[in-house]
Image (cartoon, rainbow, N blue to C red; front, side):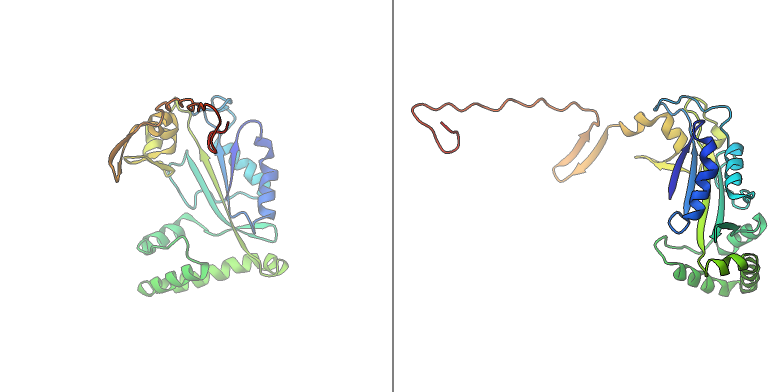
Length: 254
């Protein structure tokens, strides 16, 4: 995963950065572009007017050389997140998910399948093959889809000697701390776990100190400990001086 904070000073570098990710797709599997926002920390201030999801998408398209299917997979609020799942083959990209209708039907039919993120690719494929027993039409859908995708990539697959890598693009449009949109907060898919409930990242940024500096009661073997993050440390007492008369000892010295 490679995270890039986008601000006015590096907007023009995005196409070159995208090309770098494509050429190193064997190492980078997710390229995330996070739009700068004023969260109460840092020195850049409010988001520049030219900084937007649309502008970042255009720059990514310039680097890729094609438009990516951002609407095929919808994550969170459309003004907050954009996602495109691609395959990188021989320096070229191919969409993994052809359209929103195909993906929506897949989700409806396989929403009951739970995949461990630590599972290997072969384990994941086997899980879905077993699940398709309940919906055998997906054997045909999967075969037709795989052949169609393979046919489009055939020349690049031959040139790359069969080496295919996943490369996802993700854009996150953070909000300024003093301009939060309740609708976007409610639909957020990028949450932070607090002591009570998950909270939208933008809402957490706006009230960061209130969350991370909140006093906590911690259960220990000796009972309940009331922990205050900013409690001042006790000043160290100066070490006692040893005085000897008429000689010395091995510990204190002469």
